[in-house]
Amino acid sequence: MNFSFNKKYFLLFLLLLAIEILIAVFVTGFIRQTIGDVLVPILIFFSLKIFIPKSNNLRLIQYIFLFCILVEVLQLFNLPERLHIDNQIVTVILGKTFDWWDIVAYGAGCSILIFFRHKIK
Image (cartoon, rainbow, N blue to C red):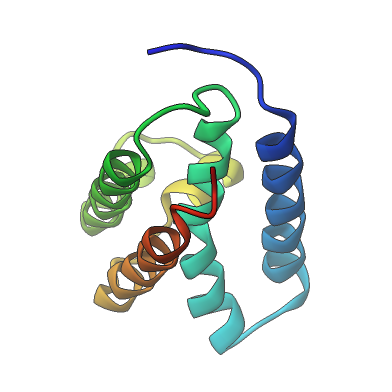
């Protein structure tokens, strides 16, 4: 795997990160609970493409979806509490509540990436 730095993906990552932060801080309801989760795999995709821009997009999207499912399943076990981690950032990243709809939202985000994967080059 060839590592390099891609400015285009870095800028897309920063833009999407800013949108996610704005949603987390200022928005409630459907947009925060659903659209925020749809954007998560896209944010992860752009963050990885910063350093591995020539990676296989479809395979990367599949790994991201599996990672999102893993994090969601770990929420069933309330990992931060079980590990006695009292850090708000870790709690926000890992989440506290398992929800099947989150997996659907992650799937929607990955589907968007798949649909646009040829244009992302």
